Length: 547
Ligand code: AMP
Image (cartoon, rainbow, N blue to C red; front, side):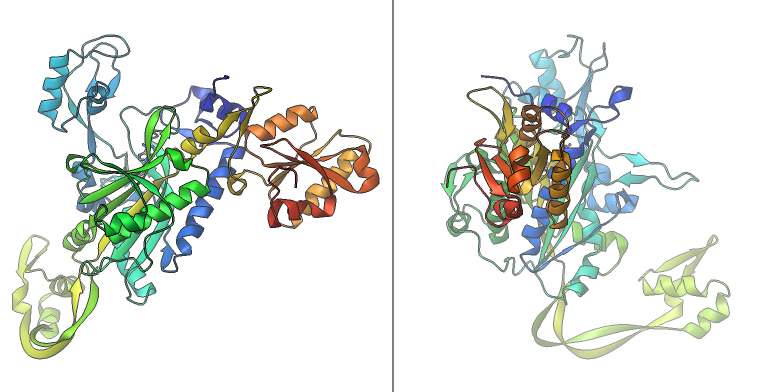
């Protein structure tokens, strides 16, 4: 059986390849070529469509350059790191936990423990056999200089934070009704210690994130978890269970209804885009593996030629992020819930504007804003002003029927590059007879719906081919036209990048007004009228079998 080298085919066929190749490339950075970009875009569109169909989902498109305070509040600034260990001889760097995991050791993420274990096991550099140095903290975020003594900006390590800090914007958009979700697709950046295996571990990668917001007293997604589709669950206590997300929730295997819901949604989405359902599982994080913000997380994992790969994480983030942004920004990011009417004392600040105007010419705005922000004092050019002297507190009894709460968040976060890596892994296939490779991806994510191939680029075959090409473009199909090389080579080329249909124009076509339609997987060919191509491809997709 021919070995399938995903990376080699992808480079040769323009699916993906290492960035900056002519200058030797940089590890952990990959570009998508003409076919890969189209496949990727189609996956993103299906993902967005899947979520928009929920009806209570809106999109956010934020910047990748991020304010340092956002990442201090979220905990990334202090806590987003891995432990590295470097060879003292050749300088190769490794993730300390991964070095040990290779020996089947259950790792403790503690630098002293890691150091002792590496020494105890006598581990050496995998590249040159040299001595390994001390275990060190390796920060994962990329700083970007702003210059002029300003704090650096950071490239976002996840897209989620931009959504959290704009919660109020979306709360208003959704007319103050929870739950709702905000999605974002875009790049995340992590300075990984050992980027490897092409798309598997990148330093710049594509994320599709969905932050769903709840009143913590009512953490229910409006639709029920799926009751029709079996999923494979691998629980924290080591059980492997095959059941539906609905039953898993009913039986308490998955405790949170929205997590069960998103496992069902993710499972359908993955199958739709070509992940093999038999090679998919949802694995619950062990307690010691959970991120600093999460109380429960389930990873979607795909079984591939490099082992089980995490392709998405569904994390319960609780109120962690939003409450920290409230705490550090001092701003209102609360939701409000209706409660039975009750009386309470409301304290109002009455600001003495006259006195402020008299005492602080030129700084009036600053003083008022400091009082409104709830500060006790203000430093004005070295002089500390006691703000209490400039307002009084009035108390009045009021009746209230609402109270504030901090929304909790459940986040399905999908890693697009790893998803694409797994799709390619599951779908590159070898033909039994010829040994040729073809990519069996679903038509919905094919880079092109149809390749139009005149048998030769002469005798009017090319003109007719171009006419058909133009017509198919006009009806909205994604089409590629190719007249160079033998027809066999062209079939092989489009088979390898997953184009489901080829349309060939031969001499007979010129007389009869028909074409040959060829199906990628079965290689079956049928003659159809050229006006019927769209119908075969789109309305009633031909499955490449005899009808
Ligand atoms: P996380 O926020 O770590 O749960 O990441 C969300 C998803 O992004 C993961 O499930 C992965 O699929 C993907 N991902 C995380 N780190 C990388 C990376 N370095 N390269 C490629 N994909 C990644």
